[in-house]
View 1 (tube, rainbow, N blue to C red):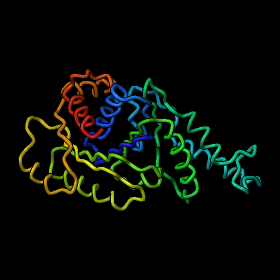
View 2 (tube, helix red, strand yellow; view 1 turned 45 degrees about the horizontal axis):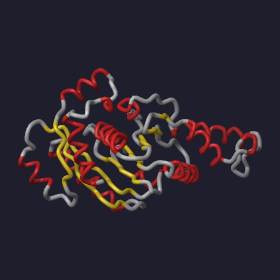
View 3 (cartoon, rainbow, N blue to C red; view 1 turned 30 degrees about the vertical axis):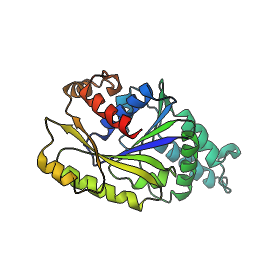
View 4 (tube, rainbow, N blue to C red; view 1 turned 60 degrees about the vertical axis):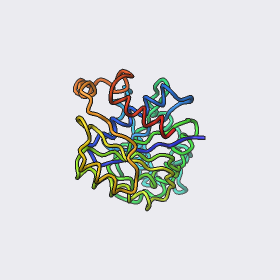
Length: 261
């Protein structure tokens, strides 16, 4: 059985940083392989994981659609096939599997750029099937989402066991987290557990923030302290997964993962 962990939150709150620590924890402490899915169009999860990224799913999708348009111009693809009789599903399956950035105990696939003009319903259906089939080969799937969560139901049909909503220590961040938490009830996928993570806190979390958090309909899973070493890694583009196990950032996230898993 595959356990899916999704992270969400407004831009700039540290979702990708927390994602890296979750993946580090799973790779070091849990049996089985981990698939990281970078669902943010900016596609920088590979940097914190220390993996090279050559192709994204968006690149593959647009390349395939370009070939379909070209084939239609010359009288082919009438039945949804590409040159040589390859189906769109077969094309996506081959190229997405080939685009995997492989690590030791974790691999990465990046969704990349969003859709352009036109209808993407059919190709998104094929993408969901390919990514869901690929995910079954992994014990854990960790999805680093863009600011919203709407694309989760467009690009995967997988249930989510744990949704982690990340916020910075500001009232604006908590309001955004509350809105994102509300979106989860509108998705076409089932989310079993939802939690809030308060990230990048200097010292004690301010009482007014904690009081506001108590009003939310999701529990506070934990507080992640500010970590100067992690900031130094960011400045030097060193992969965050190389942080030492005694890093305050990693220790905080590891404690949360141990609690929910």
